[in-house]
Image (cartoon, rainbow, N blue to C red; front, top):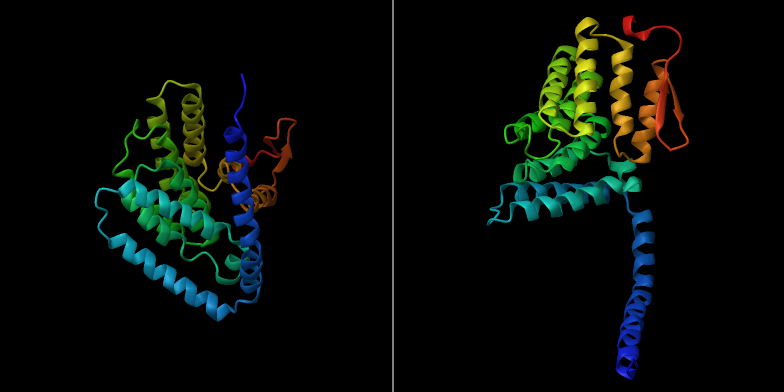
Amino acid sequence: MFISREDITTPLVACLCILGISLSQLPRLQKLLISKENTSLESLQKNQEKENLRLNLLENFPSFSYKNVIADWTYIDFLQYFGDNEVRNKTGYSLSPEYFEVILGRDPRFLAAYLGLSISTSLYAGMPEKTIGLIENGLKFLSPTVPNKSYYVWRYKGTDELLFLGKSQAAKESFLQAANWANVQTDQESKNVAFLSAKTAEFLSKNPDSKFARIAGWTMVLQNNVDEKTRKRAIREIENLGGKVVINAEGFPVINLPEKDYRNS
């Protein structure tokens, strides 16, 4: 079987065109990076005000049957916002809940968004009350089977209530609900979550101020697919409470507790 000249030259030309476009954009990219480094705090704050206005408009803008599309694109915008460490170090994370007002308002069954909400708004923006309010609104649209593994939303809520608000009774109820919803499922992951959630609720019932329960809460954060900054924060919090984090051969964190029993501390 012979290959024609056209079969060879067409993709070659396309590749060269793409390469040429990419190279032509390099000076512009370098200029943008330099500009970003030299951007004043005042300018960054003005940009943040504009973004806040855009999100407020987007929250109230008619969706025209494209709710999921709006939620997806806003989530991508959030990831870019959250991942810009250089700017976030200057202006903070105060817009985090605004993104999720749009995202979860359009698609309350967007499971991955709840983890992003908990990390960005509770952990970085320092607004756990806002996180829990958004989760509570979203839970009105969820059920034990829709979306799949929706019990994780109850676990995120319980973790925030325990770690950031100190509301152990509310956290206990959230973990019980997580266990109840997980028990509806038959897969092994759901069974594990049901068991762990029920045990956490039991710990909180017996000793609301247990360091062991708080270590368990930070372990939940650590076991999620989180960024490096969140990972370091979780490890630091666990070790401050007396635990020791060891990464095993498979790359998973293992929590070692000292001989002292922290269940009663």
